[in-house]
Image 1 (cartoon, helix red, strand yellow):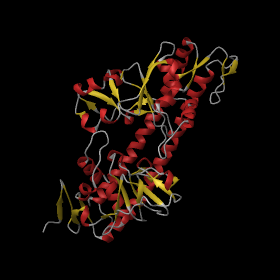
Image 2: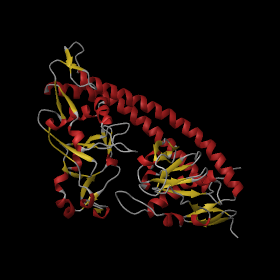
Image 3: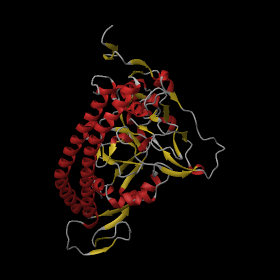
Length: 430
């Protein structure tokens, strides 16, 4: 008998088993019934509050009467939760505390059964399993996988004692890497806060510290230079429009090439993330062309979290369709695109939108509220000067941010590589 068993394109140690997940785990189906006491208070975990590297990052406390319909699944300590929707997010975590915790129906809840519970979480968060989940997922906009399909994924299974040794080693090694990542994340947050403070000061106070000031009449803005004016976003745009809804654009409408679709994943703070690309055919585009955005427009996300996501469409794309929850802003000549881009990224606008949020677990605003955003308007030549000033300051800050992000990506890649090598037996705990 060979020293190692063949597994996929690799192999595992001879003492290990290889089997589909369904042979060694069970999926929990315990859930809250519709007859649950409306006053039952619990801590809710949704997909957006879970990452493979950090586990559960936060809970939303709520009563059953106020909970979204997806807040239903019960969990037990030691379970592993794995997202079955938006699988690219790799929302995977071990349940360390199960007291009054309810998770989204978008999670599969894995009872470890024959696994060490911590080892199972490392295994499910490994690239080995995550890539297989990605391969088996269906849907372009919101890829998903069924529990049945997930359960047939073939995985390596070390003896229980070795699972415990691997899990203990990975916990210690990953804790060190996570600590280094936390330092970089704090540094990135400091740079981001500084960047926001520069923008806030420039777009509400201007560049002349000796300018005569007046009340803006807007609490979140305060005093502004006396010769500046104020308006609302609806008055500085010729059009404010959301993307197509419901049956106008479904998962079946996406194609491998054609006209670009701008989705929430593309919208970041001050930047357009082009790493995730979606398309519709030319024929489909003609039926939804009223939702076209161009490089001269701005695109604002209706979901508001720690940042406001507002971007320009890159010139090389030419034109695209904005999906629902991505609001297109077509500007009038009285405001420059770059100035408004900075202004909409300011803390004042973030505070305004936060005051308008609705939604139990993920706050969002609608186009009516977006149209009411108060806008501070310097003369056009001052808008240009503010943009030039901020652009010059952002060069250094962005260079530092890019460097820190690369360091963070390297550490995270090391973490994933370490997990992969140990759960596949390429490296052993001795």
